[in-house]
Picture 1: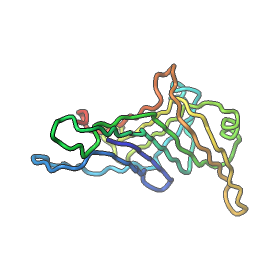
Picture 2 (picture 1 turned 60 degrees about the vertical axis):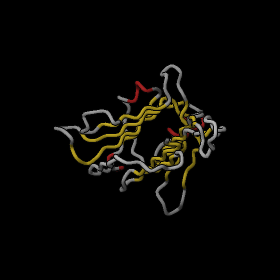
Picture 3 (picture 1 turned 180 degrees about the vertical axis):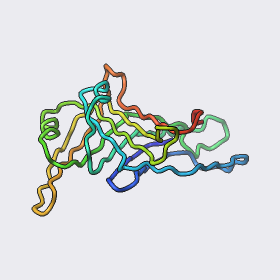
Length: 200
């Protein structure tokens, strides 16, 4: 089971995924044949980031150019260890594992050309955030492979400004995603590709 997923993007690079999985002790199996498909990388140069006061406002929001972003999803798995349920056997692995509180956070680096995000962070103004990343190739007449992540309500945190004398001034700020009761969601992720059936 997936425990954590980190998604990072930096301009002029591929979108990168780093995940941690937790499972029971491996066992041998037969009859399983792995299948591999051609890789289609998502390009950060085609990323679109939007901010709005709510999910409905994201569709009409302006795209905000960013230099880099990070998104971290933590499910906080906990393994339950129990004595063996069958008489005469030894419990050598965890019995079950369960998700606890879902934590979603991340950060952006953006050119500092306005006080918009500083003011939002200092005021504690909640924002809906959308991160959409496309592939390079078309999968139809006009559509591309696409990963869209929407966060229903985020508090912007830890705003800072890089003021190096010989550098372009940039701003960095973090965010923590919250569950929004009126939207009945915290996070949604939508994958668009050429596959016509659901993943097993």
